[in-house]
Image (cartoon, rainbow, N blue to C red; front, side, top):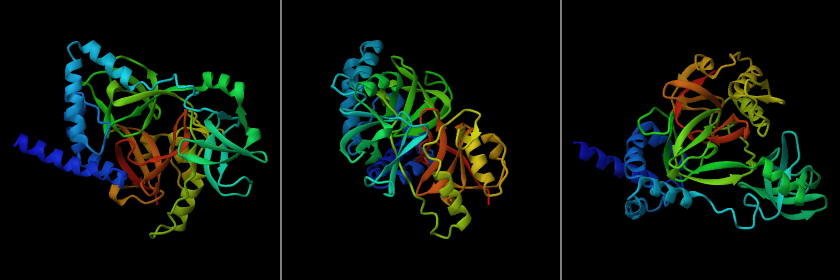
Length: 373
């Protein structure tokens, strides 16, 4: 029976992973909700010690890397060093944090990135304070830049360039761990026998608190945890631009009030995260953000993510509507809250590095969801 269950689990997950590119959010949600992600990921990620780097050919890549790691595992310490050197991105490529012509945003909160060079042009993204960008061209007081997944125009007088930018980057850059497998556990301690805090999905970027041979201590939102070193790629990074998202919540029967709430929440993307903060303009933490946004629409909530989870009524992830709150944490203990904005996305005050941003709703395992009105 055990063999049959594992076999069926593998077949199911392989089928789900095949469509990751076209329906990534749905796949992540299904894997997490079914509980198969935990058992299947455990068998691959923590038994074989094999990172999945090619999502299109999981089986072949797993076999190939298992053989490679078996040869390298005569000494556990040597194997760990080998994995670490493979996953550490090269820094000697002539770039500064990946940029050849570096620019750094010199603003208090964020700089609008526009589709054209003009103050009235459509906003396509937001470049947070101290974020880096590649300067591709200049035009009449505007730079055409690329940062993260956003390309567009920014006012050149708000961008630091040249030697000043290079020097500033040395102070601003952070060591980042990028998840290189479909799902990976974030653990309470650096071992496989401890509590699993949450499951994190592919390409999620985690700030490194402390680098180790086998385990990396990382920051997830405003919590710390540990991830196995072989399932992340390490690189020195500056903050990046965020895509400006306009909610489609006005359709599909969503009320005007909820649509307005989502648009209000999104208008603060790029603003600062401050632990314990309650100011939408000067800095908030996760529950301060949701508390203040909801207050604008007549909903009074406490300044606590755990406390807020006791308000409203419970809804499942399949029932989520724009304006609902999603709660995250460790096991059943809630420590983070976000606002669902539709299309499988949330807006939340994440951490001091990213501030208020838009994320995949299933970037980590949800604990519960609540509808306030």
